[in-house]
Amino acid sequence: MRLTIHRGSREIGGSCVELAASTGGRILLDLGMPLVQPDGSDWPRGTATRPTEELLQEGILPDIPGLYGDTNPQVSAVVLSHAHLDHYGLSHHVHPDIPVWGSAGTLAVLWASEVFLPDVKAPTLVREFPSGEQVDIGGFMVTALPVDHAAPDSRALLVEADGQAVLYSGDLRAHGHAGHLFDDLLDNPPTADVLLLEGTVVGQAPGSHGYPREADVEREFTELLGSHSGLVVVVASGQNVDRVVSLYRAAQKTGRELIIDPYQAYVLRALAGLSSGLPQFDWPGIRVKFFHRQVARLKETDQFPLACRMSRAAKVTTEQLVAQPERFVLAARSSIPTVNLLNRLHEPSRTAVVWSLWKGYWSRPNPLRSFCETHGIDPLFIHTGGHASQEDLQRLAAAVAPRAVVPIHTQHAARFDDLFSRVMQVPDGAPVEISEFVASG
Image (cartoon, rainbow, N blue to C red; front, top):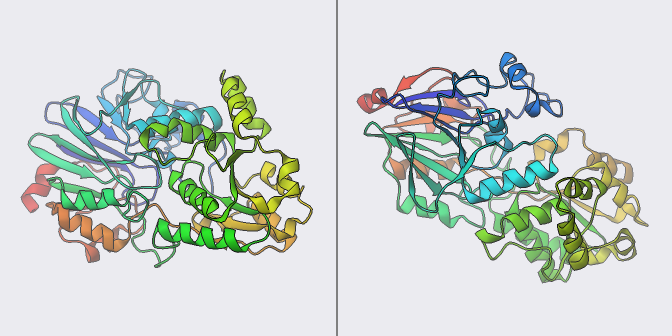
């Protein structure tokens, strides 16, 4: 096999890896949107959905022959590790005859996001991984291994061809509610010549991604909900179902009701088949706060009957929230509608605001930060990251014992040399034969 990292060897986000077999077959692992522009600023809204030709000219889409809609398709498939935009956000640009593979949870989030998020489009042709089975994709044998991550139903990808094997970690961790999956991977490690290993936390300060475990987050939520006398607002990713589970459990323990929005309710409903523990809008203690734009999207996509079901089962009104804020915990976005709602409270300054995202995002201008500054509120930071610690990455590499560890999804690839044995640096755009790794190993 031949390995080409089109993007990701020196940055977090925008991951895209190509594997080519001696038979001429080619597949891609992920096709993500870069997190930031080269100068570090955010991308303008709508960038990912601009015309393919423009994104290719600007280098936002990697120049990969035979991948896009204006060429003869020469790639067998795109295989997604999970449903975060920096791993799938450009996959809708592939030729409509090229299938995009993902787990059931990954595809469910893609479709849900397409309904609610204007910058998201799902690929044309999708294929779902059969649970626990090896799949022949264009002559490559691909096994999607369940891993713990902040995106639901995430996968590491084992790809075999030409008598060689590459394990692509995707994004993973050991400290979420599904941390047992990491232990399973260590107990039954796949055989791989090359481990393409994410290194998000490598080179970053200890504790920069929050609490050590999701269980710690749940404990902190429980203490806060039990001690605070007003409304608690928690800003977290709507796709982070671990966080919703933690918040729901904390609310149940403290007698509060958890308010979610239609997007969160929709995502949880789409993922209900994955776990019986994912809260649903018709469960006790769950309420839904409707926002105009989200209801409009349900109408536009012919799903207004679902909005009506949500309303009958769980609707909470602004008046109810204003009258008894201490009854509720609100899972929210940092958005103008959220701030407008909070400003309806009789005493907005008594609101407890929790930032349950990476702390670095708080430093960027956002509506909730402005709300806190206006009302003199000191935000609380209660979060744990979606990525394995350096120590857990080392445990994984030791268990797999590949002939080479290749850094990806990291800003500090050079630090890998100090942490792992048999590291090989593969820069973006440089094709490398796996046989070179085998020989060097």
